[in-house]
Length: 193
Image (cartoon, rainbow, N blue to C red; front, side):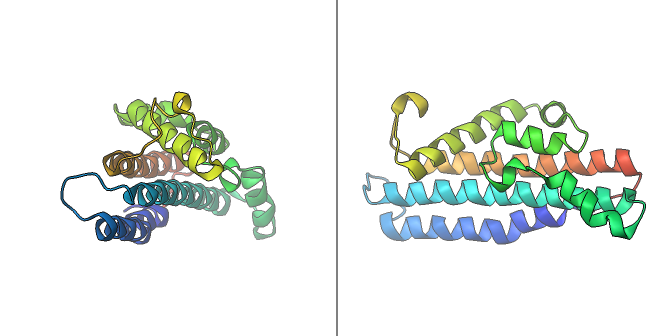
């Protein structure tokens, strides 16, 4: 059974992303051709995707911490203290869900995160690259700093690219969920979800 975090990603967060897809169709139609007004919708979609994925990652980290704390803490009075230590300075609370922040935050739970993700999914490195591209564009949009050199040579964004990033995030979310479940079982001998 997947984590609550993953279930929320696959349902509520997916619904929010589907709604912006519907807005895109309403603004630009569904047939072929150039639609200049959709560029802003594509930007909004990319930012929403990045934020929803960051929310999923933060939720999964919190859910993992909760499992560790409730399984390993010797006394209920220590639970808040131990939980606070696992989340102190968590990068996902203040920055993008980039590979470096994910590796650091989940690494605090005793896992070489990206090595395990890559071992579980051969396409992990390509999906990590897609995540980096999504976050680069998210930052360019949020800070209005469109440097083609940092954005793969272009400043325009097509719906197809956002859809590719969404597919990569979907697969990463599924992989992260499985990786953390297996890791937590190995640490605690108890299924976390």
